[in-house]
Image 1 (cartoon, rainbow over the protein chains, first blue to last red):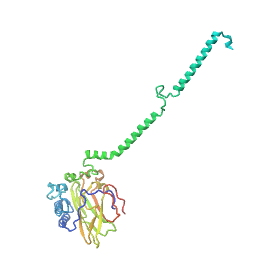
Image 2 (cartoon, one colour):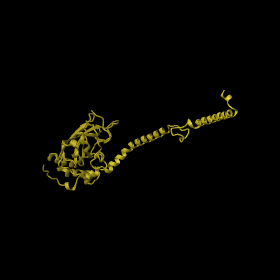
Image 3 (tube, rainbow over the protein chains, first blue to last red):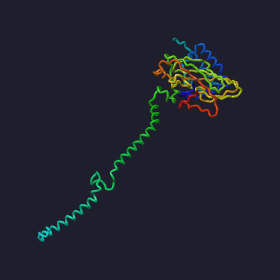
Image 4 (tube, one colour):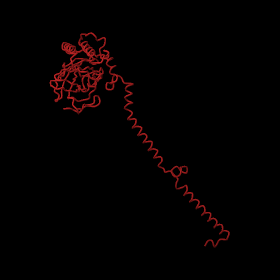
Length: 82
Length: 248
């Protein structure tokens, strides 16, 4: 428990959202995950909105979304065929 | 007695021969004293007065210099190797690719044929009174895509409490491919009395995961966060450098 080798995060720590300014986006994202059986690929657009909220509320440094792994080709949620 | 039978002339010659002999004898002994006894293995050409251990001293100096050189080379090998890896290394070296992680995230693409499930666990140290839990029990993903998940922490006490988190990834071999872009670990997080906050974790699994033979059959990964109360004197391991001692 709580052992092994660990690595620091690339961009450090998220500032805490003490006032729940982006809680709505978070709740929407979690609802999407629950609805899609925790398949996060279906909810990437909502996670992007969460980050947008954080940047707007200055809870996160503004960055190019390409650098956060949101690519133009993945904008729309797609049904995955298994 | 013999000299009595000799004529005077012969006696004189004998006397002279004897004296010559004595003379040359002395001269010869002087030579050996001057040159003969100090002759070294190099013969008459070896300089006088220097002992034969010169060759040994030179060899010792060369060996010492070689030893010092090898020692210096072993110290220099660490930065030299790092430089070499930077110049020639590719993304297939996730342990040393920290500098290029931003480019890595931009350029990597999801590996669609390797579905994984990441399970989430939340723990608190016994002395931390927070309610700490993951918002989702698990998430389905593939290597090469960034994933956002949430934990929630609540301080039910009536005093502000500061916590600090660390994490574990199981199986251990998967931990080197588990890269966090941003999270809430290793920095103190303060919760006011009665406060509840969402703590996001933004991570990805390196696409090189699929090339690791040890992880060929691994489809479930567990991310476990553990919150400690941040007090003076609490020391956590240096991230990325050492493994923390077992906290049981």
